[in-house]
Amino acid sequence: MWRIILFSIAFFITSSASSEQLFITTEEYPPYNTRGTDGQPRGVYMDQLKIIFARAKVDYDATVTPWARAIALAESKPMHCVVAAARTPEREAQFKWVSPVHTDRNVLVGLRERRLKIKNLDEAKDYLIGTQRNDYTQSVLKSLGFTHIDLSADFDKTLSKLAAGRIDLMPMSESALRKLPGASFQEVVVLTNQSLGMACNRSVPDELISRMQVTLDALIADGTQRKIYEKYGLVIRQ
Image (cartoon, rainbow, N blue to C red; front, top):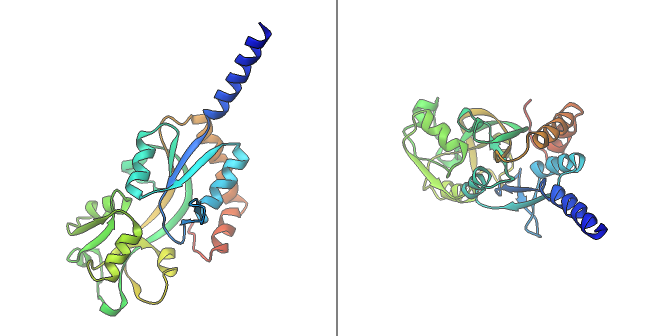
């Protein structure tokens, strides 16, 4: 009898612990996210999340995958989250949020050698813009009336198209632009200012979301988040 009771208690404890395991998906997006030699994500976002998970006592598993798949998993799979997703009005009710892990200025970037003279977003609409499939910038571009949009699976593929002259412009954060190697690319025009966060499946318990949000708020308040960005030589806007 006691063995049955003890087994039941152990099973309950194990089930409770595992029920709070999160599955984190993210894309490879230098300089914010890079893939380590072990295949695990590294960088600004994960540095913050590791602190949050440790303090909030959350088990997690993190993987790097193309953006379209990463955000689809967070939307459709229980206990899955994606980072960093733009917190747009269209996405607000689709996910539960822990944010901001990043607040940044997003710009349209072109090849420096082309010396594109674009004064505003209306003029930019005449050019072919490349971005990642299901990235928030795809929605932003469409909402602003852009019709010439080329979609790729991830940031690196879009950047390769830009370098090869297959597209005219692509959106990226100003920090991402600053970290690109060489001097081949330049900011052409500002697209948007955007807050990004960890977007979690609606199945993630509210109490867990609250616990992680309180921890993130503390990282922002005590300057830890800013120090993480500064360690990587990046800009954060608050």
